[in-house]
Image (cartoon, rainbow, N blue to C red):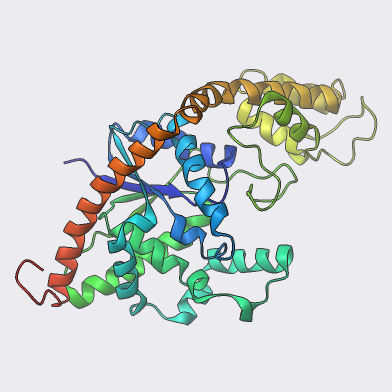
Length: 337
């Protein structure tokens, strides 16, 4: 039998090149080798968008189309909406008894996100909700509801997988070897920086290039990317290692990046020309994705049907897991329960 993969996205906005390089590109390749489940994590998106549910609702289809545009085949991968699988919520409650508040507060990923909320939105610690703090518990339920063997993640999500392992070990130590302990799989690019130099490209940070961006939008965004501050004039020598344009050339300009870097260091290339070439390379990379996405944008009923079929299959798998869980916890009170 094929091993199981659980991966997915929060529907808080369209997906960007960070998602593509860190996960989506690999998903299309992995679906031939693994039994892959792709979760549209709307419940988790609501942990910090509970006051704007329309934003989450709107982006469920957007995120689904991004996955399909990147090569996800619904005949090979199961795409589903988190809130439509009640077994996940049930499992989250059971797991909440196995982890302390102190441990959740020590989670490096949670701490980083709390810090970002303080910096961007002025959110203080005493304003954080139980749902937000319990994000790792919910994520563990997502993974284990399908007994996933592998979870492809970015480098910043490794602490979440480590916490999931801890919860699984605790459950199995109490109730027997029921749940599979997941392993993390890092994508080809562990983490993609933002155009502004931030260590993470993010929807809320305003530093992302989206998979659906057209050529004009990509060019405008690339032109705003920060460069080596020591380069003042067009033909000043510069260090591409200190430049976000150089950083992206390293990813998107495989054929000509050596020439780009050499000319930059020798002062033979201006930043404007460098940015235009980068924008062109990114546009060419995303062109087939954008074209395929347009196909699904024109057929929303097809996207909805794909989700409905995925939900049906996902529920069947989650029910099987919960049957084993309840038996192990001795709460299968009645026959066929």
